[in-house]
Image 1 (cartoon, rainbow, N blue to C red):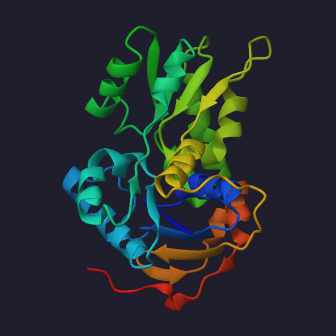
Image 2 (image 1 turned 120 degrees about the vertical axis):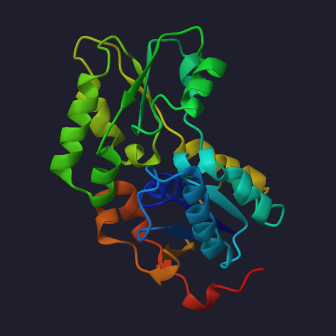
Length: 269
């Protein structure tokens, strides 16, 4: 079994690690776009064009499913990706976990990029799943970029700035960017008050990993032999795992995989 994941950058590490934990025997293809990132400031048309290029690079390695481990690409490019790749390759998008967070009751904060916060997409999620509870959108300028470069000082500064905008009574936080999941515990530490109940973070990685397995008809097998191999594609180029990925536990887990043979790719179309 081979599962591909795509993102503009290292936000895909969380979902890839989740797949790795569920199926240590699965081969993984990580396809990202360092030449074209960040995608957030791009127009929807440009996001779709870059997402298609990254997806095609992954599809050339003949995966059984493709996880779009990027909120921006899921918002703007998912229909185009599915139109091109399905039914041959099931495509699984990533949606912020507003629905389960709302089911747990408010007040809720949604940490997201400035472009996503207040967007029609986020407003629709809130109106559909959380209309009856108190929801605060918290823009997090610079946080995704800081996580991408593993800049600890910039990460701490961006988290502190976003925490200052988060109401003190919030007990649930939806992480609306896949990059943020790599620093979830740092976000929790910045928001957790000593006299308050434990803060609940709502992430997407585990859910999309489980959905990918369902789409290919596979069951979780966390005790399987760790025989999976790893292919990394940087704007279509076969590469090793970027050094900054090793700053995160998810990246270090993936670094344990043996590299796949570069000859695994096949022409598509």
